[in-house]
Length: 153
Image (tube, rainbow, N blue to C red; front, side):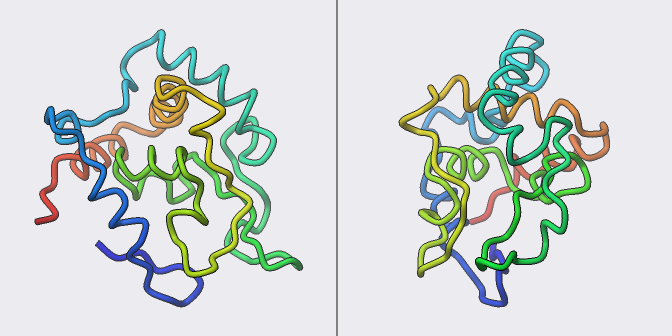
């Protein structure tokens, strides 16, 4: 799997997601408890506290999120169906949330997306991602679920 950002092919994010794979088979079934009402409710609360200021209170992201700003940063993308969040499998989304975008991409990539591993518990990170996923239309959820069962080998 390759990710194209800023004109260059970046494998770091995909490699990090591939390397982090639970040994108990949870990855294949998906990590996000998007059908668990309590987890989704908790995720919505944590999202509002930690994510909404950049990604929008309705998951809408920042304006012109595909265009670098004057400082060379990409604005925060939407997490609703109009964005690209659902193009990444659960493990990759969790790693981005844990480490932050710049840490995973490397090579001097600049991002305002910090890592939350020292801020939020793993359960809270999974709950936020579950909340986000729970808002997508069923056909997008189905496609995203299929990503989590694909063997990249």
